[in-house]
Image 1 (cartoon, rainbow, N blue to C red):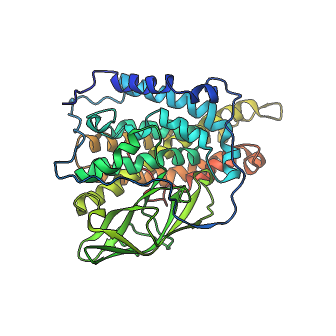
Image 2 (cartoon, rainbow, N blue to C red):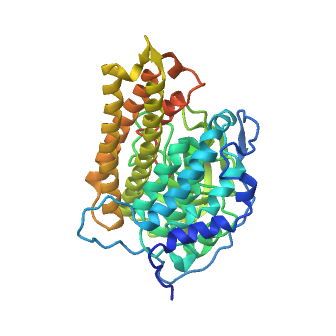
Length: 438
């Protein structure tokens, strides 16, 4: 019987994983001048799904393991726990010393370095929402921790953050809604050292896309389902070994299904994007893809799908907070050091007010996002809060990106400064569905 970790247990577990990893010496994580090795730029491509791993199917039948809901202490407290502070502290250091310096190269390559991705496995990102009994780090739901981790990673670079978090989204989905057989089949890979590249594919290349009105279909056939459709903005699709795909099942509506990349009919093609280029976004083409009946994630309940969409939007809100904080810190320094007419431009009232507004908007976004995450991990209804978080981070996230570019003037338009990249990344927050999950 698994025992619940004592206070600070999860944070110490993460630190122990990092300390015992040989890749930390390769990356020289605490030297800000170190950069990871990046592959050359990728051109257009269209390939069959990756076939590098065969998942050994396990026949379950027992009750699936589920994370316990966090109890309400009755105290309104925004102070992170000791566990959360330890985890976020390490992630922030990694984001500042590895992701931030490597962001421009990763964007040019349209990919995140494999060495960087391997290092995030040492942080245990995929383990945060896997039950301890299945090799994870906790028996408690940790949506707040997930938001804080997303925020810390995105402060370094949102594109690379999405690439790092994509496998965790699949692991979280299987943990939250998967059957016992699905958990036993797939989660051991996510709890091991060789985490499979994987993606939660919800979005479709259609104007005004609604995740509850899907064009991708799953039709019952010969004891299974035949999938047809196209998914867009699939993270690292050319390398992914496992997908969780949102499809419309006749008579059931939007449902999540597990699709292994080696399944015949699965094809990947390039999906160039305005932002998030380091995430290696691709399109997933499903052409008469036959999957078994047990490919439906868990019981395929409508409530599970709705919760998936809400938790995904919550994760994107967390990413917006981190990128917004990066903009605020950068422009605050810029306006106090950039001089015009013999004084810092921060002395101009219009400039000072614009920076202050960014800070105000960021605090409002953060408050409602953390409230939504807190209610989610307690098992309370968080639909209202996540809708507010989505609206605020979409609207004010874009405004923060625009104001960041404006405050730098001509410098905001050139790649010498990172604000133009943050501007493009922040515009994805109100458009993306799926991909990440807390």
